[in-house]
Image (cartoon, helix red, strand yellow):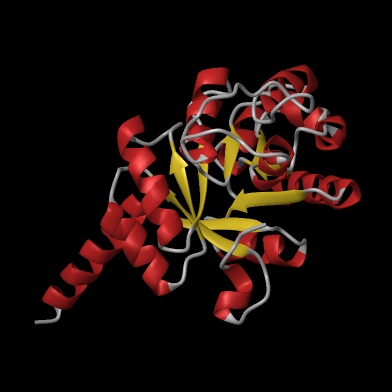
Length: 252
């Protein structure tokens, strides 16, 4: 599913990703240097101009990072622009239920599998396409449906069976809030929801992914066969670095 990943690090387990909230090439370079596998351009919560991400998608692939875009909304223009930039996959947020998933994920696949529009962009080498291109592109680009609402969780089995869905991406914070549990605390009920999604993904032979804010969730993801886990973002990493600097200064 992700190109560098476990083999490159000589380790087993999920591929390790980070969220990019601001358009910083050095953040991507540093993440690649220290051993991250994938970057997720976060259009939903980040501040990422489309032109900057288009350039970053090209640069990150040269760095050996697998590239995903979490689009701001699961609509045609957002999904199409992301895929036309050449990213390896899209993550669709706030999926409400099966009907929404069916309509939104179809936008990520070319006909007859879906309804992605045809444009002669980077994904097509800025020119025409040869035999088998559309089928190959449908296989190459991954579409993750986010499971972060009660409706999506209720319909998760049917969502996973969709031919336009390559994986399920759990949104722990929103799922906890929308399930009436308040801010995410990795409770037994939270983990039960995660286990359900993981089991559905395994039964459907689909991938699943999750952000891991701590060791407890990461260990759960590893034990339940997650394909991709995010463990940081550019802003948290920057804060940690500044905090470390102050800690050094306080000892002087």
